Length: 469
Image (cartoon, rainbow, N blue to C red; front, top):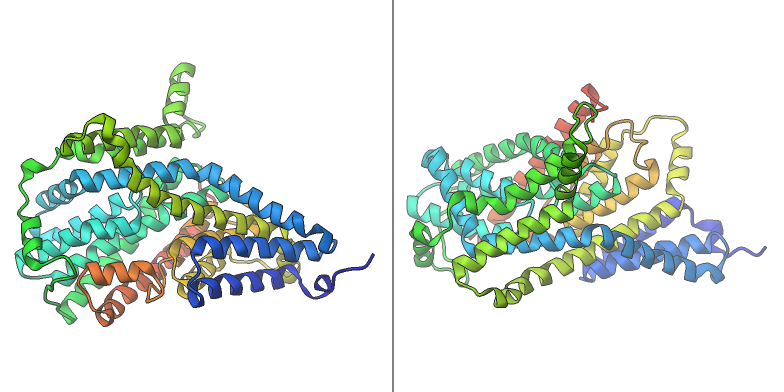
């Protein structure tokens, strides 16, 4: 048999290195859309793998494999992401998010407004895409800074501290949703665990925000299209224009409660009557739960804006367009991860390890952080890192519970948010910060939060490596 020359020089590790270099260069240097970069990276892996296992006549198998895995991933995460987008946009447009922020500030007191803003970001970033959270809450934070005349930078960074952690740990945010699917994790337990693991890094982020607010005070400034007068008007918006608090939080709480209820059925000590268990399981399916949440959110939006139900289709157009791009990116990332597995990376890495134990928590965090710093997108970083580590260890060979791997990947994706990250520009422009101010505050804060998260996961995975569920 005549082997293709590539089979003599391209090993699984070589395929991984070439594909990662290709993806980073395509996104960071040539400004190629992440979807095309990841999909072409997946096809490249398929072609190189085929070349090493049979020659040019198997190239079509490599392409077919990439496109098949793209479809498989889209089938798993497409509907949840689309529904989460509908919930998020409806929360924003109906005034529900504004209501949540105002009630939390009223509950905690204005002296703890930064904590209220961080908590608002923390609660909203799972069903609302993180850039949307920033665009939604940063004007509220800025308006509060204008009204009080102090703590402007603290309020801006508080929103970011809360939102960015949830977006990396708690489904149905796209990154953790995709990684949870790869790791075969129970969605309800993933949501609960991600929320708990996120508390310490958020508090660390708030401490950083207070430090930066004290050492580099920033005065409110107008941003393109948003004057200081309009911010003052936003802060003075009457409560009568907003929905009630429990109505405002229902689109978030209802699906989370249903998913959590269904997740409890997986605990051996919990037993329900068969019909009740079937009902709870049905309503707690992520797709059903999110459909109910989206229905509530759209209903509130339609009522607040006095939109007739026959015109609701127009309301759904914008969130679905946003979701489509995210679905394409995540599905392409899933295809890339599966093609890396097919390349045989796991076998080669285990052979090279020579029986030595690999710390997959550190490896997962490092891969995610490296991809984030290199190409900017946290979602791309998460799904790429997950694809690599699962190709090495599968979903059971980490030596610790897979939830720790998801958390490590999520925290790694928060490291080094700088100029190649779209979120960096959203924060700086909508938050009213200069590039230098954002680098000296937000970039440093997000990196510290990522490192705090790594330390937390390392400690917990050492003390309690195999969780009880």
